[in-house]
Amino acid sequence: MVAFLGVFVLVVSLGGLWHSLRAGMAQECYRQAKYGKPEADAELVLELCRKAYVLYPDNYYFSILASETAYYTAASAGAGTKQRRLEQSAVWCERGLVQNWWKGQLRRLKARFLWEESPSKAIRFWNVYTEWQFWEPYNHAVLAEMYAGVGDFENSDRELGWASGTADGERARQVVENEKKEWNAILGGENKGWGE
Image (tube, rainbow, N blue to C red; front, side, top):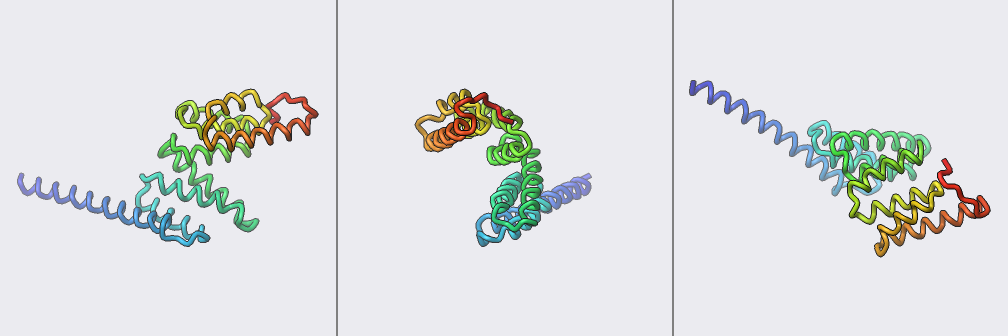
């Protein structure tokens, strides 16, 4: 019986050691990707995040770094690479959201992808997050900008009220004012909203 317990403890210990080694190697890949990379080498960052995820898929920070890197470097990439980077970003974003549905960076990226598909879907998606994390002025500022983007200035102004007195609120106020000018110029002062 004692021998059986000894073997059992040894097997469990070896399993724990294997798990911790994989987690440690994954964390080292992440560290290199986030802090040890040349800024311009997005492909290296994405490869390191992929390796980290294969080693230890339970850390959603790999997904955040990979999705943001792919998204924010897509615009400066060549024509063929741009679309591939956006697709990579979307995949990593979805992967991260499966792990942590309420992570703000991932939800913001998802809202950006949804905006391309349907602004109203993006607004509904971001609104759920804003209601969940209501106390954060940034969330209201983003929602105000989104409402302004579809010409819904009544809701946009309401959201600006929740972000007033903050840097995010002031930035959003400028965006909303610019959108109002554009909508008024296009529609000659007639604004019905939800121009989707």
